[in-house]
Length: 399
Image (cartoon, rainbow, N blue to C red):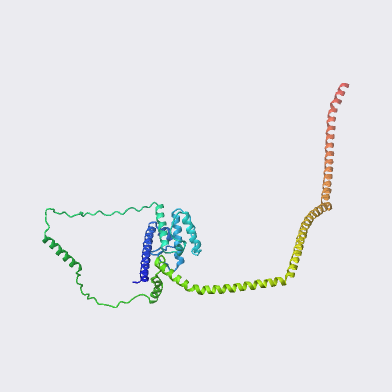
């Protein structure tokens, strides 16, 4: 076996061991989820009753989006059981943002895993199985579930058969024991004779649809391909790669050096040409450059004056606006006062009120005259009544 074949065999063994470890880890996770009653507490209300199997998160599915969404939903449910609030991501949210939120939630809950964020972003594999298994352990611990040690049924057989110490073992007994062992071995390898099957043989016909079988083969074929990845940690591989790279460098150094020397010479020539052309341009346009600087200074002065005048105009505009507002206020007040002076409504009301008062005065004068007349009449009656006794008294005196 060559070195490359040995490396490939080792990689295949490691890959097989890793898949086996992932399978058993997910199998333990599934059993723990059943203890947590995920089928009634999680699958029915949140995933429309969809359950997972033993290798659901061990291998990639055809619909990776649904697999990642199931993983994030199950993670949210387990975090809720552990007493942490985590917003359930949507099915079509950004996987990078969702994975970053999961890592942040793990840091807050003090749950550590030795896997990068990209492993969780896949939605399957060893990292996902280990994380779910760890959260299931913490969820069982939060619910007070404890796994005790297994109890084995006690063996009722004696540890050692009784031996007669006085009995001697001779050569004949040993020969009998050896013969019995040979007979036992012969009995082990003797197979019973098979009876002839007299039933009528029929041709086996498949009831599977060929089209469905072809579709299933196309779905499963990528999973059956064996991928052999080189082990980068092998020091021999690094050494061989280093030697090959060193040889390539030694071969390419002379040509590269010559090309760099030529390129440096071309660059120096171009720099000298550019500097010469620059000096020529500066000497030819020196007067124009000075004139340009003078014009630029004049432009700066004019710009400064323009800014000052513009500032003054702004101030005067503000002052004019203030004066206009004051004038408008005064004009409004004058109009209100003029309207109140030309309005004859109050005068008409006063005249009506005076007429009403005069009418009331006349009625009062009439009532006063009537009352005075009544009082005078009553007074005259009273005086007349007082005068009669006096006249009678005078008549009696005369008599």
